[in-house]
Image (cartoon, rainbow, N blue to C red; front, side):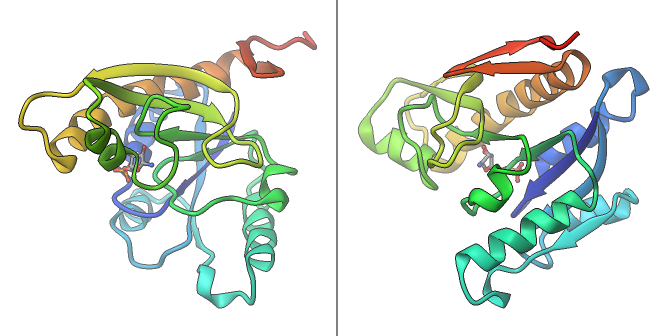
Length: 201
Ligand code: GRF
């Protein structure tokens, strides 16, 4: 399966996918990495590995919908079977969602703590267990059908950065497992429920 990865920062989840995809049996090939920000570490890592990259800076467009359309077009050039939003910090709109099947990885147990500050919000709420969720994108914010979740306990003395780092260790494994399975087995979505395996085979 052809996979386009979208990132906005470090790209450690993207790097884990690229590593897994070196094995031809993995089933997913990272055909391009896209970003809304020039000069991030993740994009440098992708370029160094010879993966095609594209940048669609938000501020270069007059409004959100023009940006969303440009993003959708750039993604489409790579003809992906699946788009993976892995640390991509902007909300993708109808032009992308309507044209591409996309999953997102989120550092909390959805539907708790959606949004850009999930780890901080979970800590502030005082939860003892948080974690990570991989889900299909829909038109809402972190609201689409859930594919998998893994729990991560909050430890005494955790701050946002220590907790986020422990979540990211778990996220990378979950992302690699889930994207590989989606790529190898296909999937179907029935309402809020995701099933592995193709229904048309
Ligand atoms: C991850 O925790 C992801 O869930 C969140 O942003 C972080 C990205 O980390 N949306 P990285 O860029 O993959 O290192």
